[in-house]
Image (tube, rainbow, N blue to C red):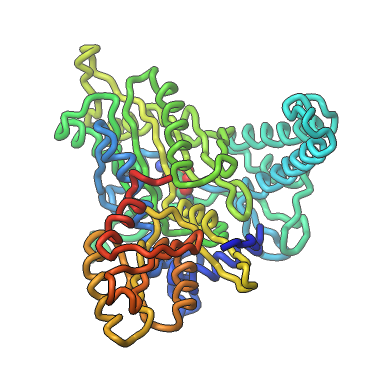
Length: 516
Ligand code: GAP
């Protein structure tokens, strides 16, 4: 069937995705009956399945497909000195600023970044205009390096970025405020430039461990899963007889008391990370850093995204532990934003844990016949952000030939929460019993649903909205010749096939190996 894509863009798309996620059991605001909890969300029945499929795909490709990478599951609570050693107690801060008129709080760095993005958008506009004007003869590189207006904008961007980098390196918060004033950045709510001073705010949540107040000690909820890997480096290396280069991966919850928590599941206070620390010989870290940059972008594209949806952003301001860092950014409905970080973390963490614990965390390299502290290249992705990227890319509003409309989640088959739904055409004549028989056969192979409520058309629409790639319909002919119809979500095409072939047909399509 021919369809017209009517999917909106930008804010409207984002708003529609959020309400779709709620209506179809993907994501609910946390504690909703108590009016919610800011920047905390719950995954519903389909959301939990999709999230699990994404986590499993990451685990499969990062851990099980690499002989030299193993996975662990460390505790969320860790010795508090770990966070002193890692630098998080002293340096895991965001610079915050308040607008005195709206009483709204902002991250100073985000205000500056948004301002820079606006200038960058002007460059993009100039380039697009010129591309239309010059047609095939247009050379973007030459235009960007010669057009006076573009050069002027770029100069402004570089000046602001440089000033900001120097200010942050020197922890000069007065200068950060001055940049905001000089750039004439206004509060998006009040429109005023009536700012407080900039101050640092630590993002870690803390709590008490121990039942009696005198015994109890301050303890943090981990803000990243990585430290659980570093402190287990020798345990894993020795017990697994791992040889450098090797990796340790894990997935799990992380917690950050974000100042500006907005954009749905993009920036949450409780979220999930999937991280891998790759331990390498000192001096070889840049080679591995570039290797993992290229591997990770390929991995993202294997999820069915077009090339234009991702880009790299190299960091100007490096975290306290890194000597090189880049983000893989995704083109979310609100623009390009960080999805994954690739960091060359040097030997900072292992050395710091050696110093604070007094225990050696070194590796004996049999090929070099020497001991050293390995360097580390990290890949770190937020599972919730990946979820948002996948949902945003899959969500489509379509107008059909007959004038009706549908919302469809065009999820890759191997990621879909429900792979197949079995439907008896009617709730009588033995059709439900036959459908149940087929369901009982399929349920061993993949996640399936049984649905007999409402008209068949309504049931198809419901499955389209959930993203189910295959619907199996049992009708009177099934009872005669043991055939069913299989209906494909994306094309809406239907084929009549022998019942015994259904399981294999779907298994083939939902297998990770056969992802397109
Ligand atoms: N171990 C390194 C690390 O944690 P990061 O860049 O701070 O680096 C890695 O975080 C990834 O975790 C980000 O690229 C993002 O996908 C995800 N992430 C970070 N903060 C988040 C938040 N508040 N909500 C959702 N995801 C977040």
